[in-house]
Length: 67
Image (cartoon, rainbow, N blue to C red; front, side, top):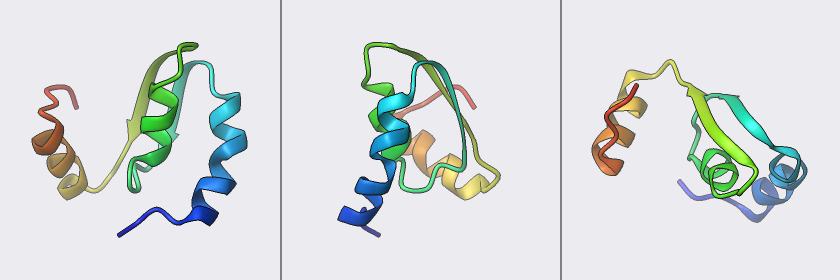
């Protein structure tokens, strides 16, 4: 799966408006969570994901310990 230019364009506003503690439902490809996590004015990003396979994949790939 790839992130398309249209998906990037439709997320621009919400990414630019994200500040403080950000909560997002569903990881998707992780683009939104990654982009907001890179902002200086974002303190934390919490992702609510119900698919255990997606959670396990990201934990393994990015060596995450928290769930």
